[in-house]
Length: 192
Image 1 (cartoon, rainbow, N blue to C red):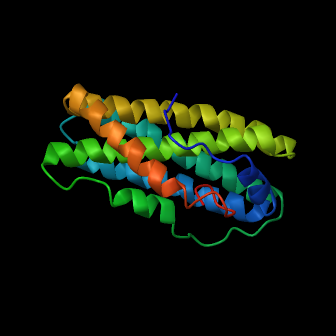
Image 2 (cartoon, helix red, strand yellow):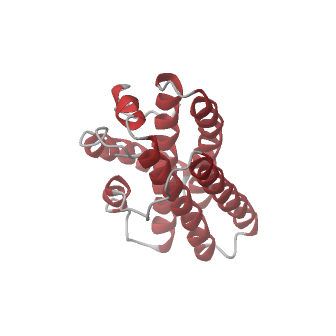
């Protein structure tokens, strides 16, 4: 569906399952950052009220996911750790075009779509490979939500820019992401 060039090795799920407390804390902070990103996009698009409305819904949903992960952490008696740097996301951010306002906004949408696509793919890997039944169900539900967010961000990009140019740029994003993801998949983090 996402045309990701390099799928996650299913063994990453075993690494993640080796420290559920860490993966949940990292995941919670990923959701918080996704909500913050949606709010930042709102500040860039005040004249697009329909997109703002949809971004508000995404931000609220991401905060709800943050809350759900936080509740699982509390229920299991884990410690909710501090926010951590996401090297994968920081490397993706380097690819955002700093050109015209339209180019920047379109690329910010594609940046968000890429993160949602990879997160969805990682949730699918967790769903198919971990033994924890509660988390299997939880990640299956989130996988659907992340896929919807991916679709929304790609749609916003096509609405705000020339669809043909957006599709070409998405292919460039896919190639770039394939290069950097090769260094990931060996840590107890959602993107690590």
